[in-house]
Amino acid sequence: MSGAALRVVLSAGVALLAGAGSLVAQDAKPAGAPASPAQLRRLLAATGEEKLVRDMSTEMLAAARGAAESAAKATGKPVQGLSAIEAAYEPERLMQVVGSVYASHFSAAEVEEMLRFWESPTGKRLSTLQPRIVDETREALTKWIGDHAAAPPEK
Image (cartoon, rainbow, N blue to C red; front, top):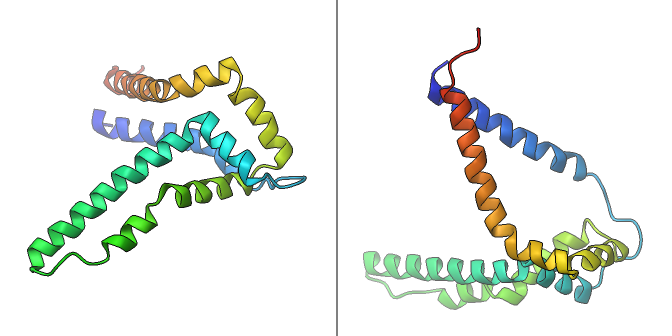
């Protein structure tokens, strides 16, 4: 097997292993009272997801605006529908969508448990470091896959 093919196989294996836990967890429904919108907002703020959604919505809106302006230049027609695009990427609406996804998986009691962690000093530290940890993990796994793909075959 070539090095490139082995890298693809190893990458697929890592992705399958990473996704296996989420496949099992998808069937779990929250037991107990549903989480309130206020609880969900606190959780999204504590985990850093609120900032991520706001930043992402700003980037998506800029990309949509650019695409609309490019299309207008190419067709010679004025930009249309930009206000609908801007309304679609309104961060508050996106936060409600993200919150509803959490609400479909976690009860109010479970959200409170998560909040105790995420609002603790360790949880706050994790929230701050998590993007860096994700990047470093991706780099480490890429290196590990590359090292194993480049290794001579075992005899």
